Structures are given as structure tokens and as C-alpha cells.
Image 1 (cartoon, rainbow, N blue to C red):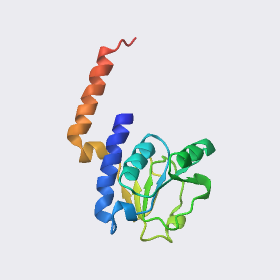
Image 2: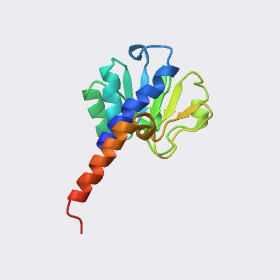
Image 3: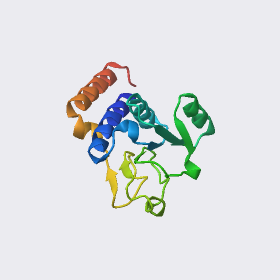
Image 4: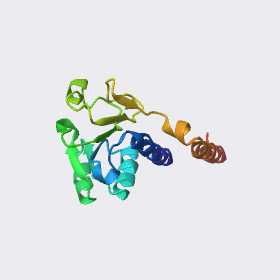
Length: 154
């Protein structure tokens, strides 16, 4: 699952790039969720000198984020002001359509398995590994199934 999250993060950046009017260093980005995909995505974006803020509900996670050099927000009190790019990785509604409405220029990309963002301008990007990196995704699936079959299962 962690390897699949890394592939998803690479594909998410590939999805976002054509929508940007700036380079990543000039694209303040908010990632909602500090799970597997959020961690991989924030690391890749930071390596591209992108200013990244991650929204997490757990105060310990927010402290860790700040210690790692990321911005941090509480998911319960999100502010979208100043961001150009938003990735949602949380599989639950965090922002309502009315909260997103005042930000028509914000590029909103939904990566969660269950929709957390809604609206006509939200880019749905589920299942990215199989769509945008089928060879890498297929190799990972093969390795996972092979490893599972070699393990002793009751």
C-alpha cells in the first residue's frame, strides 16, 4: 500500500502540472490528510521546492509536520487563502462546496478513495497508478501477489 501511495503521488503531480500557471516553487499547496498518500505527495512536492502545507486532525502530526519543515493546519479550522493548489487525500468530507466556492482559481484535486471534495471544478483523480503508470502499477501488483502466494496462509 505504501508503494502504491508513492506511485499515486507521482501521478497526482503529473495530473496537476497542466493546470498550473506557475512553477511548483511558486505554487503554495495545501494537502488535506497525512496518511500514506499525503506523506509521499508532500515529500515529492517539497523536493521540487513547492511551499507545502498539510492539514491534519492530530495535533502530534501537525507538530511533526512543522518539525519536518512543512506548514501545518488543523483540518477542523482550514483556511484556503493564498493557496493555488489543493490535494485531498482524506476519504471524508473536510471542506464543503460552499467553503470551496470563494476560491474558483484554486486547483482542487481529489485523490481519496471516497470523495472528500465536491463541486463541478474538482478534478477527480482516483485510481491513478493503473491509469497513468500502468506498467509500474502492474509490476507492483505482480510482486504483491507473488509475495502473498509465497507466504504461509491458513
